[in-house]
Amino acid sequence: MAEGNNKRNIKASKELKCAVAKKCGGCDYINSPYDKHVKEKLELANKLIKKYGKFDRIISMSNPYHYRNKVSAVFGFENKKIISGTYEKNSHRVVDTKNCLIEDKKASEIIQTIKKMCISFKIKAYDEDSGFGFLRHVLIRVGKKSGQIMVVLVTSNVIFPNKNAFIKVLRGEHPEITTIVQNVNNKNTSMVLGDREIVMYGKGYITDELCGLTFKISPKSFYQVNRDQTEKLYAQAIEYAGLEGDEVLLDAYSGIGTIGLIASKSVKEVISVELNKDAHKDAITNAKINNIKNVKFYNADATAFINDLAAAGEKIDVVILDPPRTGSTEEFIAAIGRLKPKKVVYVSCNPETLARDLESFKRQRYGFEKGMVFDCFCHTGHVEGVCLLKRM
Ligand SMILES: C[S@@+](CC[C@H](N)C(=O)[O-])C[C@H]1O[C@@H](n2cnc3c(N)ncnc32)[C@H](O)[C@@H]1O
View: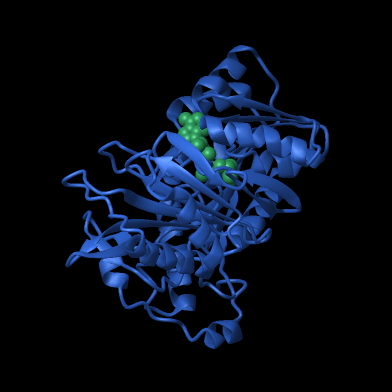
């Protein structure tokens, strides 16, 4: 049975319906009862890993709407009118979305304001086919606890016409915005963000609070999109690690340092490895902000790094890995086999790659002990899973 399901709360929000769900394709489940599809998501995840173990349960949300703290809107045209929203399923046609049910409400309002401002400021939406136009995407990140809001305007060109007036009007409409960044993406690519960033207003990043710590989040750094569910997910991951105070913990695919920093008070030392430069820099700052001194950060590919650790004969007691949707690598897992940590906690946002990696772990004599699923992406087909693996 799904836990955390406050029926009264869901009834209060009336199991909201989305008119563009079919076109948009983001929320496969939005028009079916929440309690029912949450159970289905658990069943599906269990089906995928059934050769190796079983997730005990799924932790759902009492109010599964407007949880997304990161909202990315693509800008385009429809009948010569500027529109913003998401790409239609399996295409690059833009679906005009105004009141998305999973996005942060304030973020949606800001995007609508920017759309109107494009008309008054004569800003053209970028056209992928011709390469003409200026505004490609608007990315908004909201610190759900801190209340800070970052607006990233992704443009095809570095020259922002009437820049100061644009900032003034946007801030006038939304004084809650704490920083505005221009990101220049002049490449013919499906990647949202380009390399160059220009801070137009404020600090160029936001901070948010998670599990009692403060985290700096830059435009390109990974941060879980559902803050409230993430607190439960990370608490469970750390509980599975069963830390006693004298361990060396490897936090692999560590992003802005969240899991390692949260676990640092329960271990002797944390070694964190992350590939993204901006996230790595944020992680170092995050240790300073929280006055944490027993975490070492490395900016490297996790597989190359763990191979070096194994070759150097380092002693690692526990590994927590939280790889991207593509999962980890056979080589990473083989190095775990050589390092022989007592426990491995795997945080996964994709049960398919988790199942593949569980097979590699089995080859290294690590078996599935227990696991749980968290509905961090309510109404979509995605989930986060966490499981404890032990040496057999
Ligand atoms: C799912 S996120 C988890 C981040 C962090 N643990 C958290 O919860 O915020 C995966 C992270 O892995 C990083 N990453 C992707 N490929 C990597 C690699 N080959 N080596 C190290 N880190 C990688 C990404 O930049 C991202 O920060």
